[in-house]
Length: 376
Length: 159
Image (tube, rainbow over all chains, first blue to last red):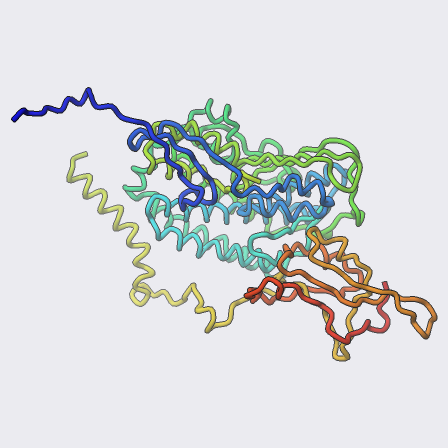
């Protein structure tokens, strides 16, 4: 019998396609990635959007300016308040009205609470993506405290619709300050536990360190923003670069967290440190909330002057731009939202190449996608 | 680091994590006294006063409401959840035709709880209810008529 010898040089590998999503638990929504694979190594990524397109931008053209705000809740639902604030600020900028100082402070506190809630949810889900189920329970327990604060003051847990052009919907609930003062030390005490539970874990470290490297140049050329860009050393915090609300009017001392490693762990660390910075911001504002009304005078039917208006804010995911073109009628002529997730998804195409599928899942969770934000 | 050193290091980080979770697994040992979850159907859910559950119309004991039929809520609503069917009825005392609502129809299934209708209402006729048991077997049950049958406008409420 003839002996068959296997010459590995003769073996050819074949590239094949794999659909990751749209119904995949690790894509956090209906995001479809068309992967070109060689074995288990990702050669190319092609994101396919449109599964959750609700044409929010088009709907805005048929709604009045007050009514746009409730639609923006449904874009990036994890930083709903910051989206509301962005639209409200854009309209206020166009109308050239000065909102009361109390409104600015309330909006900033709510915005930072939203950011913490978003990062907490991200932390829980990120642990789950790399195989640590416990983190989810811990993060949701602590996020519940923020949800309670939101429910008590805004009347809703997630889609608050709290900012209106010229002010906020309701005044703060009498329990608000008390609850925040309970929450701040609680979160300060649990974040070291989070580090014990997940950050220091050897398996987690190996999944994160050195995986998913994005260079400084890549981050800029793909338009990445928020913690994703700051993990690659790009300084891009809108709260520092183009201050709005209380960041402009009050003297708030906080640091912009920048890591230069550019890998998964850097992006992870940025968000963990950002939560503490957000607590610092809230702590500086909570003790002296000014008392000068919650609504500037606006007309019942808001009409913007002719022109183009842009407002950029820093959501939990990065740089959100609201661009309104007005032709002087009661509806906007065109509204464009520059969502941070969309640009960060572009970065994924570059980062993910050459990694294994399991690493791709980890990379995706550090990029922190909210699919309704990417695909409006 | 050696192979065994790696294993020892791994076990050490694993135990650090287990210390945190063990705190909750053995509450009697570590003295944790509170529970975080609630057994919902048995224990009542905690709902805040301001919770935006659904829009309701307030009626007093004489089955009178405060809605004048001005349609401010209908105009303010971004997605057409509110429809008001109204008519002008001759008021015999003053001899003037007055707007009277026949039905204040509220589509709960379309409502996004944005609070604009309640903000717009000049007479405080509608308000939020904290009821959250809104699921039904049929979509048509989500269309509600807010004014009770036979109700009429409260005296003294004007547009």
